[in-house]
Length: 214
Length: 294
Ligand SMILES: Nc1ncnc2c1ncn2[C@@H]1O[C@H](COP(=O)(O)OP(=O)(O)OP(=O)(O)O)[C@@H](O)[C@H]1O
Ligand SMILES: [Mg+2]
Image (tube, rainbow over all chains, first blue to last red; front, side, top):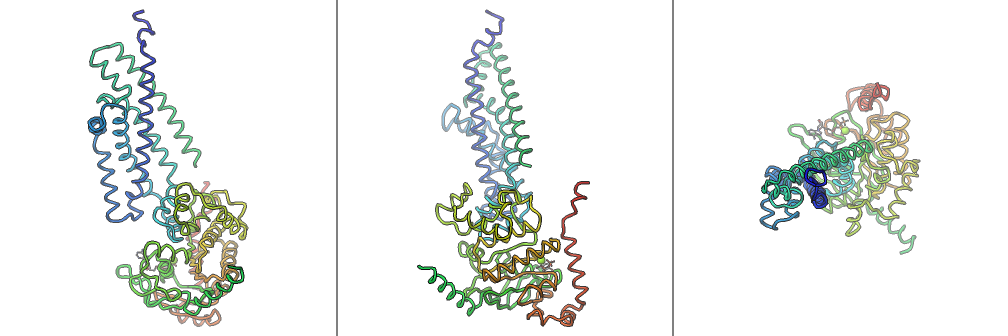
C-alpha cells in the first residue's frame, strides 16, 4: 500500500544485504590497513634506528597513502580491478594504512627504550626487539586506534560505493540518479542507523580494551 | 658424547679462555664530542673473576660496559675475548657476542607489560634458528625445555610463583632478579651489570648482590659490576677497578684499596665518596608510594 512503512522499505532485504556487504568491506579494509600500518610503523618510527634508507622510505610511503583521498584510490582500483567491492576495500585499506601508520609510529616513538635496550643487549634482532620490547607496550593504544578507524571506515565504505566500488553506496548512487526520493530517504535512514549501531558497539569495545589492559 | 666428556671439554674451553683472557680491552676509547667518556682503557679479565668497577658520576663506568656489549660503539681501541676480536662484529656475529655477555641494567629494562616468564625467555631470543625463530616471533612459542629452564632460573632466586604476573607488578628487587634470570637464560660467559643495585633499598641490594656472586661462584661466570659503594665492591669482588674521568686509576685487590688509596685517587675521603653514592641512590629511587597516592 502506498505511504505505508512496508511500501517505503519494500526492498529492505536486499538493502540489508548491501549494508552488510558495506560493513564487511569496512571491516576487511580496516584489518588489512591496520596490518600494513603495523608493519610500516616500526621502520617509520624515528627512535628505533631503522636506518637511513628504510626510515624515510616508510615515512614517505605512509604520507603518500594518507594524503591521496580515498576516492582517488577507489577510481584507480575500479579502473584496475573493475567495478565491485574489491576496489572499495583496497581504496579504504590503503588510506587506513597511511593514517593508522602515522599514529602507530607516534605511539612507538612515545615508548621508553629501556626494554628495547634489554632485548638488544641480550642478542635479540631488530625484528625480535620490535616484537618483544615495543609491541606489548603499544598494543592497547594501537588496538584503540584501529577500532576508531573502523568507525570512520564504515562511513567511507558507504560513500565510496558511489564510484562503483560496491555495497550500499552503489545502490544509493543509482536511486539518486533516478530521483527515487522514497528510496533515497529509506537508504539514508538505514545507513545512519547502521553507522550509529556500529559506532556504539565499537566504542564499547574500545573502552573495554583500554580499560581491561590497564 | 657422555657427561664426563662434556665436562672435560668444558674444562678445556675454560682453560683456554683463561689462558687467552676472557676479556681483554686494548686502548678502548669512547668520545662524545669533546668529552672523552672512556680514555684508553687497558684491562685483562681472566675467566671466573668478579670485578667491581667503581668511580664517581660521569667516570665512564656505564659507557665502558655498554661498549663491551657493543650497545655503544668504541671510538678506538679493541675488545678481545678468548683472543678473538669482537670490536667490529656485525649481524649474526654481533648478536651472538651480545648473547655471550649478558647485560644487567640499573633500571632492570624488563618489558613491563609482559609476564615474568616471557621476560626471562627473552634471554633465549639469540638462540633461535630457522623456523623456530619464526614460531617465537609470531606466537612467542618457546620450547618446553626453554620454559623449564626459565622456571628453574626463577625458582633459584625464589621467584617461581611470580612467573605469570606482569613484570610491572613486581618490586624493584624482584625485577632485578628477573633481569638476572633473563641474563642466565642467555647461557652467557660474561655478565655485565651496570649499577644493578643503585635503585634498590639495602635489603634488596644485598639479595641482588648475593645472586650475582652466586652466579659467579656456582656457574663460574665472569662478572663485571659497576658499583657506587666501595664497601659493596670490597665485600663481593675479587678485584676492584677504579675509574676517574674515563681512565683506570686503580686496579687491584679489595685489600689494596685502602682509605689512603681512595683519598689519593679521588681527592676525597671514603666517607665523602659514600655520601655521594648515597645521594645518587636516593635520587634514583622512585618516589615513595604515599606520595603517588596523594
Ligand atoms: N650518549 C651520550 N652522549 C653524550 N655524552 C655522554 C653520553 N653517554 C655518556 N656521556 C658522557 O660520558 C661521560 C661518562 O658517562 P657514563 O654514563 O659512562 O658515566 P658513569 O660512570 O656511568 O656515571 P654514573 O655513575 O652517573 O652512571 C659523562 O661525562 C657523560 O656525560
Ligand atoms: Mg652509569
